[in-house]
Length: 128
Image (tube, rainbow, N blue to C red):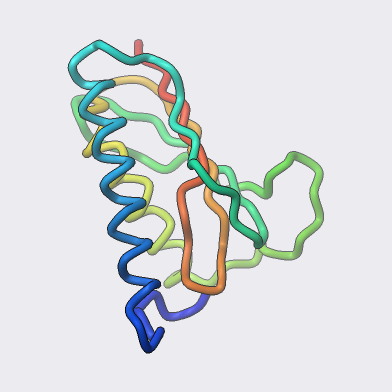
């Protein structure tokens, strides 16, 4: 994965990241309030290898159960992530689940590894 810092001369990369975060926060607020139950899906598509991050949450503690290539059976060569890359993915997904107020159940989060860093493409929460 690339260094996520904004290296664009006009700040477009950082602006896009903030817009993405704002969109996810609005989705999370609606999920937490019970007014929305459908999965999150990014409004745009990103280019890059995709991963599915599977999690299990109990009492607000998110445990990553697995990170697999997406779609299933894809052979993109990204399954060999170093520990730093895996930590970034775990942190990204746990932050998303915290924002969504996910307290219990499983979740499947699809992440795209873009040149500007990982981006959440979709997330489905399964409450228990």
